[in-house]
Length: 556
Image (tube, rainbow, N blue to C red; front, side):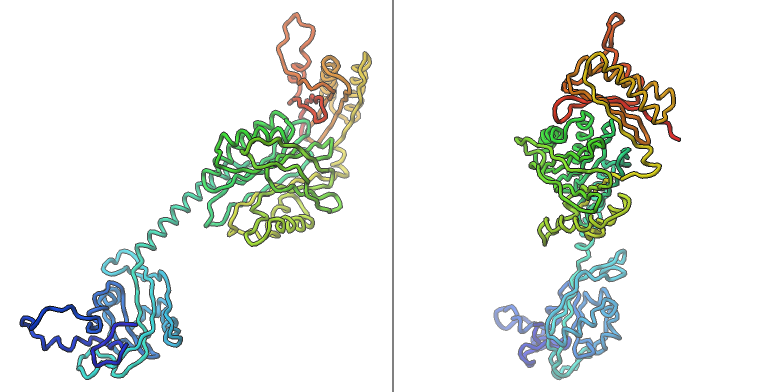
């Protein structure tokens, strides 16, 4: 309740205007008759209490909110106001601030209401250089009769229900909040810029796959996280696909993400099985920042095998849609997140033949605070089953189907790959041929004859035909000399390159070395490296190795 009026007023009532202490004039200027006593609260007038409050105070009464009193702070900001006038006429500032309907509600309900940080144009108080911000509280009171005092500021002569409007200056707090928000926005922009600069600016496009990815940072109130993805061509038509998530937010998470992505690209060049790549990454993650938790899926697609071989470190399962539209989850194995150590990761595989698609994603796509994450994965399965079109279109459709907007509170990364079923002219640009080698003196001539016939049927130019036959001969000779059965020569052409690959049962990888003039051997790999666009070797999962080279085809 508001302060009480003179003793003659009703109990609990508030005087309408400046009802002074009744004994003030009688006291005169002389010394007090007895010991000095502090006035009681009941003896203080409106001016004694509200007049000295630095906040804005206005007292109104009746359904039209007629002015009973405004204090000095209110008059300083908005100017003096005539008692008895209606608020709509004499308090236009309250109307502009939207307080009149609120005051009506307070008067009807008898309950106080508050509105926060309303802007007052033109400055606060004596400072006209900036806008002011006030939090207004409207409290129901009773404005009592003021008695017979002839004071010209007396606004009512009978008790009325009224409203006490109290405005606290929060300009400094609002401006501090705005500065903090601006600083956070700058930090978030820097983190987003760092994050995007560390992601691939343009995805590598394999010969046999169509690939697209998208990254969307969390909403404006959330700091950017450490979601990332990558596509790495490994040579011989094989492609590595990676997606990961560094837990945490801000520049630190983005920086850790950048280091892990760089490390994955370096380890991928070793052409190791997926579980070995994650094993190396696990040790590195602990060295980079032991306090950061990261998950990752590393998968390799081999068009010759028609499978996706993968390993997971605490990440969500890959979803694969086969040619007839059936969606399945890639099963175990899934190990713990990166950086935990002490775990031997293993690889699994899932079919990905022509006509199939797959999606790799981070938890921001499927995780919701009010639902189990399995519900999100199931929703993604349903959306993926009906999402057709090019990979970039599928990415957009999945985001829309899962309700991902710019206000989403978590980072989202999605990587979609398709192994198209080619027909017509496109099918003529993709061919495979293989020859089993059984060793012996006739193996090399058979390999040369096979390569010559295949390359001639594929209608390569004479120059490329001869280079291909030479490369096949040298790789077969190397395998016959240093490898063990079983041996196989495989030739593959795409719309962009010719690939020649020889596999055998020995797991010792060849290396290029400089042969001396007197050496009778040791030049095979050097010859291949010289004539081919690229070459490499890797160990095969069942034991043994594969040595390959490729030639870039001229663009038509």
